[in-house]
Image (cartoon, rainbow, N blue to C red; front, side):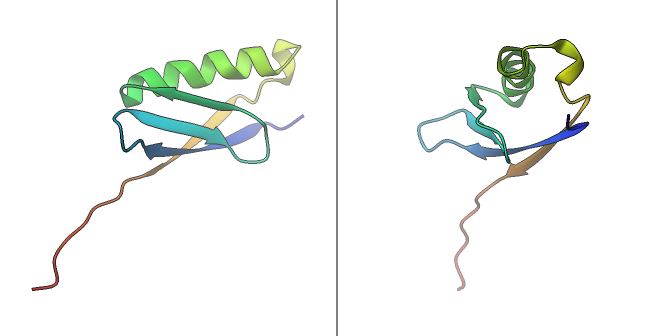
Length: 71
């Protein structure tokens, strides 16, 4: 049983955010970061059969792409 889980959260080109757990087959999305946080908790509850197996600490690695010009 893992006590922690890491989610990679990325902006979707069509809007909102996509989140995927590293090392687990858990994917979710949301329109806002708050939506993603709620959906991650829901997805964890669906993924694990027993509540005591759900990791208690969730790390969010939020990736934001920004484009800038050199000149």
